[in-house]
Length: 267
Image (cartoon, rainbow, N blue to C red; front, top):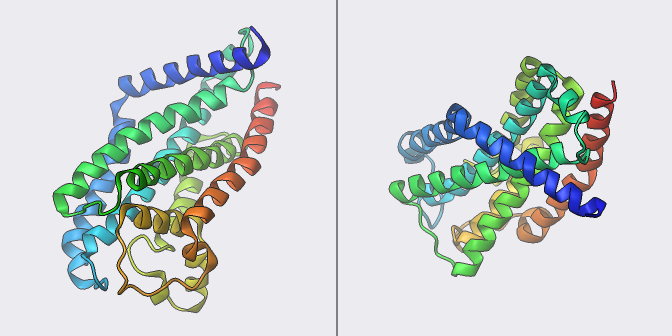
């Protein structure tokens, strides 16, 4: 078996381990499902009655934003799991085994993609209950879900990098919340970014979260000609920009996370 085959096999072993950990600790999965459901109900039935979206219901506008919020929140589990394993000395045990060094990070990030599949299914069912519908062709809808999973995978490498740099669960949780909340709320997830004042509008329009949300809205058919045409390039070419954002995030944070992991296990 060559080095690549060994790395893939070891990565799948770690993926299986982490997936079984989620089954033993369902509160992790529950946390990334229950909170988005609360947001769906809160925004759909409380704030939704006061927010007007031209040409469509607020529920259909909002649900793609909830999807992206869910994958951003789910990605934090990657970082949290890594810092817990680091504190418990799990990395030291892995170092003594004949396994590829990349297996730990790839296994963790892939297992979190599988968890995101479960959370997206739950959010889709909840969206259908509150009135969300897909109005596009089946292949476009499938592409929308795949784009969500690609961004989830890419963002999990961001949280892995942050976790390996901080090394303590408490600090990681605080930093992750401080980063993820502005990413979601300074976007077009819940309101049209064109309505935001000057500097905030620019931030929202170039926010990668806004780009992914706009792309999924287009792919799910949750847009209307009556809606204002976005001014920023990433929102006008949302699917292309989403792929570019995901590729850029992976290109930057996969090497960073790998370097930090090697440094952590090398001590």
